[in-house]
Length: 358
Image (cartoon, rainbow, N blue to C red; front, side, top):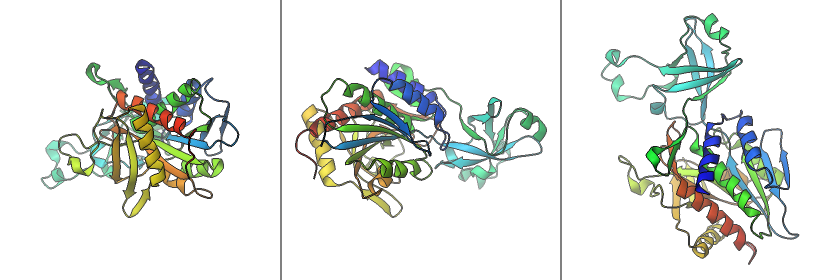
């Protein structure tokens, strides 16, 4: 199973899926899930729905993992051929300088790199600051706008980090350009595969959502469409176990098991998870003998936010994969944590065949 999870995650991470351009990721998920669902549908926004039917009167459970990754959009081509880019999603400007990028042009991929003023010319005050994205440029080796356009580059095209995912030095730590949230997608795929071997009564809809990184847009549509009884977002969360990070701010460790989310917030907006849902997740973990972590995150949210308030309201929460270096080109996850997430979700679904959630 571990080798299979690694293979699925690698294929998903390699796919290109900047917000609004998730078709390639959707195709990978559809291929991985072949034979593991009863019906497959999509909506005009691009959300994908893979449904396994359940027994009459059993609850409908929505599992939701977002397909999109952070990226960039070409906003201007300078007369000298350099490209100016804008962010798609919440980038940290410190992470963008000196990166290899792929521009997804009309005639195929175009390779470039982010440049800025050389260190020799940087003033003392500038050294203390991150370089704003608007001051960065992409060098694709051309000497004019005409040369850049001849490569198929146009304003409005998207770019991604150019990086191949891998296991670090034979460990079970996987690093890739888009583990947020291809790790959640891999968990969702594996849950659906294993459901065929278990007598789960619930209807389960694996939802691969779009445009999470630009405002949780796809999940709102998906929640309204499905109106499930229960929804679980499957996403990554922030680890606080690296040098320079105060562990008390994010007391989650890589490799210590999946995290059950209790609350997350960005600025003054927050999303408390109902206790009757977190309690059942805890009970499921205990029954299955699974280690888990307790997560309270200030600084971000998940698709559960908009699913919870869609339609007439949905009982929604999140099971998280711990991740280091989120929202960068070098995000890391641990394969054991992905496996723990799969087992926790399956145990939760099994538990729904007992007393109903009220």
